[in-house]
Image 1 (cartoon, helix red, strand yellow):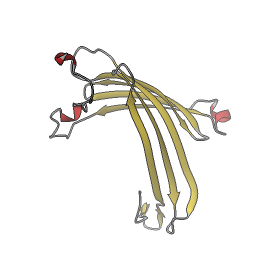
Image 2 (spheres, one colour; image 1 turned 90 degrees about the vertical axis):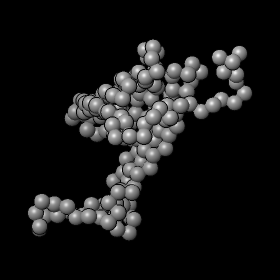
Image 3 (tube, one colour; image 1 turned 45 degrees about the vertical axis):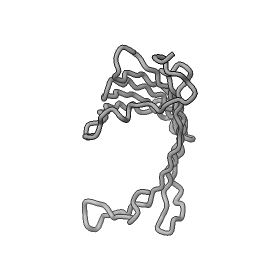
Length: 161
């Protein structure tokens, strides 16, 4: 939940607005495919705005997505992946996306293609978004434990056959 206390914001004393409460829900799952170097992620997001008494104010969005992540350059223990996918923002946009992950760096690009009533004016042009992410920057406890996979019961490890 965002803006629980409904703060007033603005640059001038007589010209402030009160921010509505915003509720966000996110759910998804990721699973590895048979080859163990490819995984698929499906998810959904909901955002809605509500007033003081939690009455819906008519502003919300729902988004679903499907991403496929594949390991590339399987020569070291470090992660090198490419991810591609498609997201759909309800009655608004289709969003193709691609990411390249090299160790702790992720470079991503996505493009919102309008499909709502603005599509005629924008001629299906939307907005380009680029992202540069650096993971584990402030994680002093990063010791590789998060990289370990859970054991699989019932299978004999390759080195013990």
